[in-house]
Length: 403
Ligand SMILES: Cc1cc2nc3c(=O)[nH]c(=O)nc-3n(C[C@H](O)[C@H](O)[C@H](O)COP(=O)(O)OP(=O)(O)OC[C@H]3O[C@@H](n4cnc5c(N)ncnc54)[C@H](O)[C@@H]3O)c2cc1C
Image 1 (tube, rainbow, N blue to C red):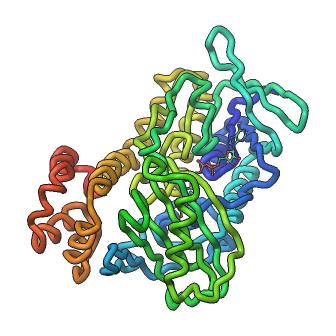
Image 2 (image 1 turned 60 degrees about the vertical axis):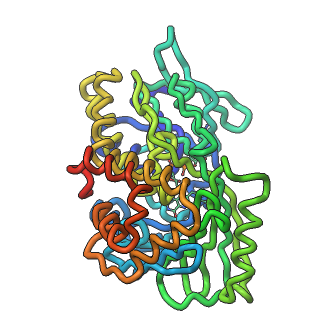
Image 3 (image 1 turned 120 degrees about the vertical axis):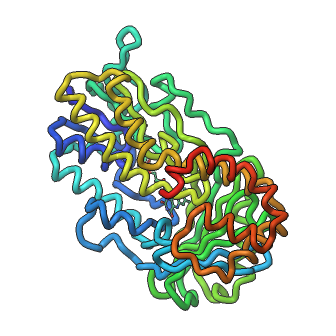
């Protein structure tokens, strides 16, 4: 088999990349080890409404709920409320992730992409170190697919990067271990996503409650692998659910476990090779959200790939256009939020309480690091020492900060 591009992984990053490469003239195949796109769901299913501007999904079958905003609770339960406009960046919709992924794949298929299911990449085909394709296993049969560009869209456990010589190893302090129930029969009064912080309740992460449909919500937890031990995430989540009266009569419809990379991005291009989505570590290190970056990065990757095919230039130097593109789009945001994650890791619960106390009555026009720091300085100036690295960073990247 010979294609211009073989994409390993049919998640959102793989399908978005495939679609934009094919729409711009490339001959694309996606191989996916699962039997069904998007199943099983491994996601809190929250996504920003900014995807509305990108016109990547048809209809609204993939939307389970439209959020009016978000509430963030500090360990002493001080609540900071964000309206839809302010929180929209991360909590605009709660989706049906299986339908969402299938819709992205359908759009790619419409553009001419071939999908091969039950097909697991097992190694790269190389000739004198030059990447030539992918060897894969389909049921018990080994197949070889030759292509000029290989895309690693194989998620958090990505192997493609490593096979291509990119160091994608995650330090336990850069990995969230997560679990989540989809609970039915609950009493969620309004369409607000909730986030609960606290070193004891959820070390190095947070608990989320995302209302999905009437009386149904995703209730999950992410904790840093470096602060975790076997079974801890589930134990802490069960404690939380037990104490909240809204969940008194709840019953689980689904339970899932998974991992989210919360590191800085890795190198994303080599000769004949591109990494996208979680494989590229394109996740927001504070929220653990990766979906918007999959779509935004996937589009840039797909368009770059199509251009490379037209020019017959598959060199790292040409593919660097993709790396420059995603860095411009969301690279600084990931870098800044990685720094914030590190600062938050050093904070005691009482510091979170003070920050929430500083912000609880503020009506922000928009959320910016500058605005947050100003409000915290007003009420709790002693906290400024803790935020010093962020101030230094802000000074350095003032331009991109507004984003
Ligand atoms: C518990 C949890 C909650 C989350 N909540 C949110 C949230 O609310 N909002 C948000 O934005 N993000 C969330 N995320 C993160 C989000 O799910 C990821 O950022 C997103 O799935 C990344 O998409 P992707 O296409 O890069 O990878 P994936 O969706 O992981 O897709 C990778 C695909 O590659 C396939 N694959 C892997 N290896 C191979 C191989 N060798 N051969 C063939 N196929 C292969 C896999 O089967 C999979 O289908 C959450 C993650 C977890 C674990």
